[in-house]
Amino acid sequence: MSLTTSIKNALPPVHPEGYKFIAIFAIVTVLIGWIWSPLFYLGLALTVWCALFFRDPKRVTPISDEMVISPADGKVSHVGKIVPPAELNLGSEPMLRVSVFMNVFNCHVNRAPMKGKIERIVYKKGSFLNAELDKASDENERNSMVLKTEQVEIAVVQIAGLVARRIVCWADQGEDIDQGERFGLIRFGSRLDIYLPVEAQASVAVGQTAIAGETILARFDKDVTIPLIRAS
Image 1 (tube, rainbow, N blue to C red):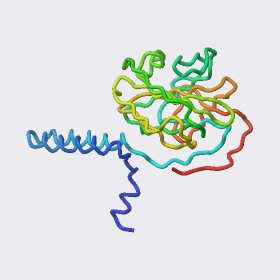
Image 2: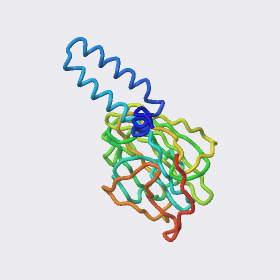
Image 3: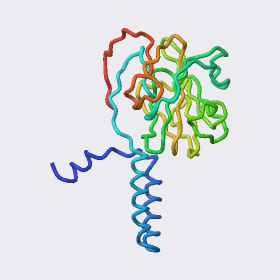
Image 4: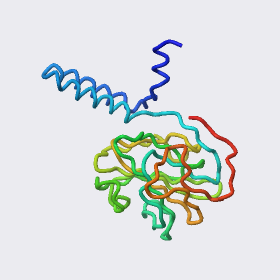
């Protein structure tokens, strides 16, 4: 195996959404390096950070209709029952909400928590408060995706944060989506909320680290076994 191949295999792939940003960082780095050479190294560090921000590593997803898989990398910041935002059209009764906060060093590619049909996608403008704040669920700019599975209806909400200014969702309403399948990302630093029926049993606690496409956030059957895994 050549050195080039070894390096390529060791580095995580970058999502195409990041190519133009990495190019901009690299060009600015060269320009400011001409002005004052010490700035080149600062720009180089920021360019490397930008490439890492848009990394898109493969994940091994446990596949089960009874499991809810984390849609994001980050820290679990909330687990509890709360009434979902009105635009989700999921009723006025409390649902189980699990929130995952992504800082600027986390991988930001988002993945579907369950297999199902995308019933609706709703974009709502709002503020850019710190995404760790509880009120960010109601006040921040967000993009919501409601999934209809064979048994239940759930929602995944991409929430912009203090730094984030762009929510990307390439999934379309009416499409079918697989568990662990990529559906979007947020630039730069943000949060995802997952709304589940109250009978779902949380499998994580506040402060725990979640990995998109791998960490089991909740189960609908505590005795369920994992019949299959998928690498993607």
